[in-house]
Length: 141
Image (cartoon, rainbow, N blue to C red; front, side, top):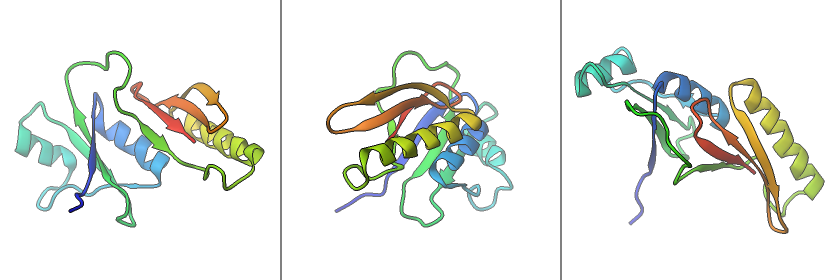
């Protein structure tokens, strides 16, 4: 039996990251749970005054929901899990076209708060490593 997947990301500012990741993924900031006017209202009610959550969801319902949860400690060290955001289908477009697609997406994401870290290429793949506004690394390929 398959299971539905939600990706949870610890962070300092859930609303900021939700806005950023909605733009990265083509998602929308998810409405708060029923009966709550905002994610802040829900967070305080469910977890207390120090809690803060937000989420983004695929408008088509195909991709996983991404939940952002405020935690008190800052990010320390390299991510143990990261997201790969595909903007090009490997092997289905010429290598130069793929490089242009990745470069264009890197520029777009830098304009909305992402940080370009490096580009990697080998005989099988070409991708850019980036960081979101809180330093969580992800790849564009």
